[in-house]
Length: 163
Image 1 (tube, one colour):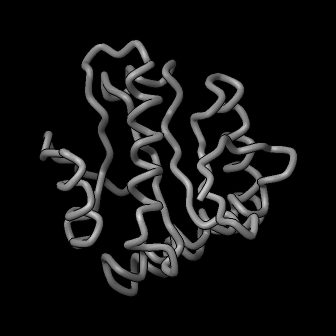
Image 2: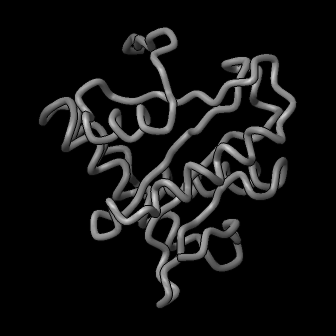
């Protein structure tokens, strides 16, 4: 398995496919039908363009902030997206924005490699607090167990208000 930086000149389709899977699986696995419908409805072509443009701006700020896991056949099977250092003031820490591994590659060590890459990048950032943070749905027990294994601890609680 190769963990490498995302390349906007050749990786947009694989990254988008992984992002789409991340969003649809997250919605289907946590929050019920209403959340699933809302998440699926947002995955429009306009959202795809906006997301990929944002990713490109982020990697212009900090190359390597989006890393892909690529198997021996050249297929992208997972990714991790750490926000660039200039956005660290949002949480006063490094932020894992997204991490996802295709179901066929779960429990194979790919997620561990991606988290190691995220941690390595975060250690290089100048941060107000030397922490790596992420949000996880309380219902996502598989993800919570993974984060526990990687030393993450509860640190506040995110709440949301509908606009």
